[in-house]
Image (cartoon, rainbow over the protein chains, first blue to last red):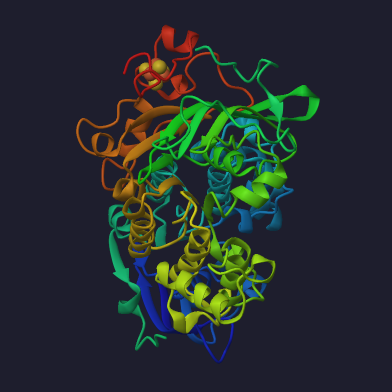
Length: 223
Length: 352
Ligand code: SF4
């Protein structure tokens, strides 16, 4: 289970963008979370990916309450969640070659020796040609870079995936291709998915069920 | 095709300063009743290291009539943003262009020098609605300050004023009127860009683009990152600022739903070329797209089959000799691989 209970979070304690959010995903389930831009759903996605410490509330991952976030999260918890963001440019060091970008999580966890085989397999899955792997992030298109970011998110074979507006910048074909990669991965591994977005047609087509932001927060404070 | 392929040295000229004052041909395509924008054989290539070239746009031709909205669609890297930059004179120094892009009065945007573009084109004859308004607006200045500055620059007072500029109350009133035109709420004029929602930031940017009353609006991915409702509102508003008042709108987008909502004409770009140019109703409805790439793109929509086109587009620096889509096309044959199909009667495909 991935459970978020009573999450209040933001960048300014006096004005949190998320107030009292609740979410629960069963293992292997996919949930689409819909909300307008600026509602706080990206912040909640970062909390679910253990990248942002909430001011209040708890995150429970497969029965364990999360006590640390970012580099303070226990490694086995941190690596059990893969995350893909909306803007690949902000999520990737522009100087890294795509090959190294994809392998980054393996290196960071001391599993460098597995990198070559894993990178070859995953980049093929996401549809990145071999010739692109030696390019640096700033030398490829948004679509190509997002493919690499998805491969990076999958390389540690996480049990959970958090996709925050993964396809918002992409054309229809690349969108369908990346969603297919995620679904094939989930069919293989039984991983669960939290897909955050603003397109109801896309999320309904993609996920087992969808929920709206208003349904998961208690008493939203709107300005 | 009679025009120069950009790989030929002839017909290619460096971007940036070029002789000004090219009045354009006196005959066809200028004067009253002329298209707001006539693009003919527009090509852009980038000089890279080791004498390599990247052909970002090749031989694009289309026309925009007053009141018409043309959506230029395609995936990232297909050349559509480069085309927009070429029209605004915002290409980097290693770019070379060929062809022409003439406004109704004959001015060729590709031949105009930076001074002409800055003083008489951007904002005045071509209004730009940018991709991410929040990034386009200066963070330390209020929306009112932005509008007043643009009005001061672009709007001439009705009665003679010192140095021909609007000032004081007249300036304030003109800026407020500009905000109102784009439905930007007066109560938010003294806010800073970061204090606005995505929708209001987009309206602020639209208000700025409308100040100069340009006959052509160029919107570069105006809906990226906006939620559906806001996409609808944004494009509907852009449409209202064009169709109703005889302006033309060139919308560059990867969002097919946004294009379907407001476009009269659709141009599909693939690997730097326009591969289909069609009335929007026929393209999105019956009989549907004619080019296999365009058909694949529509089929990829979650409203439709949600099936991706297999493979990936070719590198613009290493295009195959024949049809650039051949490697991904179910109907490709030897003819497709050998010869590049020209755009004839709205489609560039040997088997359409
Ligand atoms: S020319 Fe041939 S390869 Fe190209 S789109 Fe048409 S059928 Fe496909």
